[in-house]
Amino acid sequence: MMKGQKGITLVALIITIIVMLILVAVTVTVALDGGLIGKTQEAKSGWQNADSDVNNIDKEVTFTDGGKTYTGINAIVNGDATE
Image (tube, rainbow, N blue to C red; front, top):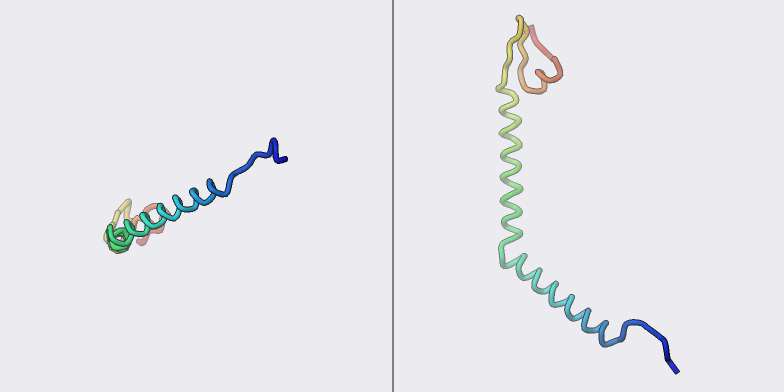
């Protein structure tokens, strides 16, 4: 009758789906209860603070070369000097 047919059985498919559902449940539990969302928000806030600090530092950097004054790292790199 069905000799030589190969493929996945319904039982194997159901077992695979159950295992995947268990993995999803564990992942969601760890993400919510483990504080993953809160840690991500803290990291974002820290990154934004660091980014604003870098922008402030850029405004504080001055370099004088032969009567030309460069204010900020971008001015030094781009050669935008004030006399």
